Image 1 (cartoon, rainbow, N blue to C red):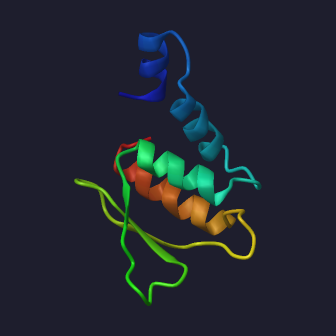
Image 2 (cartoon, one colour):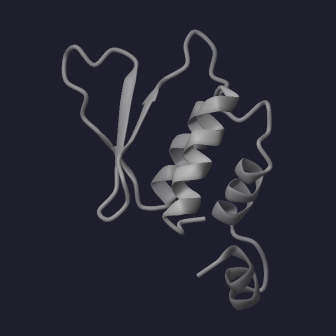
Length: 96
């Protein structure tokens, strides 16, 4: 169900819809926490990285491709190329 269909069904945007809409606008201040919350809301879960995982993070989905990212540090703002890559994957899979 698309965001527009959900809006019609629920009578307004849900928190997840607002977060997805914000993400699709490619904001320069999108945080890591917002990205994780959005991915989890779309059915992804963070896979355990093990002892040597460092700042690498993998998000797995039952049907969509795994998304492998590097967690930003010391800051919390997601880089634009990461937003564009994740947006491409989620769009191609029809999740957003």
